[in-house]
Image 1 (spheres, rainbow, N blue to C red):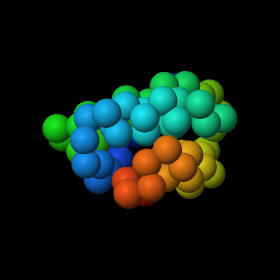
Image 2 (image 1 turned 120 degrees about the vertical axis):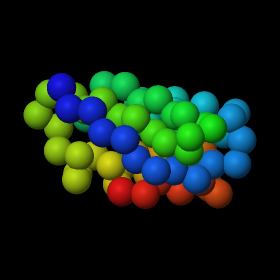
Image 3 (image 1 turned 135 degrees about the vertical axis):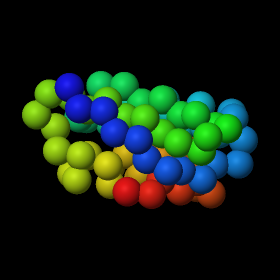
Length: 73
């Protein structure tokens, strides 16, 4: 399993939780965790998933629940 960290911008912890839940539902993601204070998202990818393909979908899912957020990929 591959795990990567990404810099994010999110305004509040509740918004970070929404991002975490949205990212976890994306196909190819086993688990996502948002560290609000650190402004980081840790993503554990499913076996065989390509982060270059999955992360744009994660960003899109996060923007749907929190339009002001940013995920730097």
